[in-house]
Image 1 (cartoon, rainbow, N blue to C red):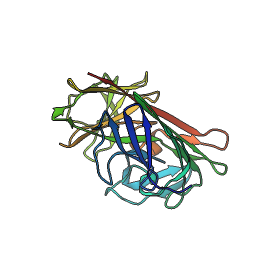
Image 2: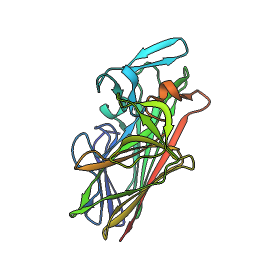
Image 3: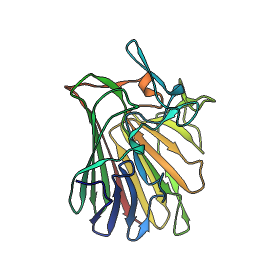
Length: 262
């Protein structure tokens, strides 16, 4: 199938999926209100095969050091798949399945599959990375840009993390866990019982971002949008907390956004 845009509908919810633009969700409208920041680099994109920054773009796999392009100097950021065209494996009225084959500059072969499923009150995103050749470290995550205001109403962020990853001057975790600090944030937090973050636009909408994963980056330093990014490990996790994809064991993750009218 092609990589043309896909529109999913369920109840009064509508999601636009853009396989040709990094497999991202280009828009999510609930009752006509757009929840995601619009623009070619925004919406919600999958972060794979790594999340956030890799220190100086380098990661080690055994004795071998790999260098990724420094697309956020001096680091590499957010994986390679968001800059690529994905393929549509299948699409129905309320679900799309996209695939992306890992290729240069990533040094390993593998396939990423993303399932986007819409219901009247939720969007569920599931991603897996599998290989039939050599094993490799990887991460999965999502980077949604939620509009800070809906119809002039500003968003409130509520969550209760167990810890915050101390952030160094280079924007990467130092390895120390500290008590969570008040925002604004561009920070990674630990939620060992699973990611659970609530965005509330008072008298408009409540949206809960949940995932079984225990890491979430919250970014609210921009005027236009706030980001709540569930992921399978912290920034620079290819070096500090690698998750291995093997021929017998893919890496899988899921996140759900569930909304309620207020």
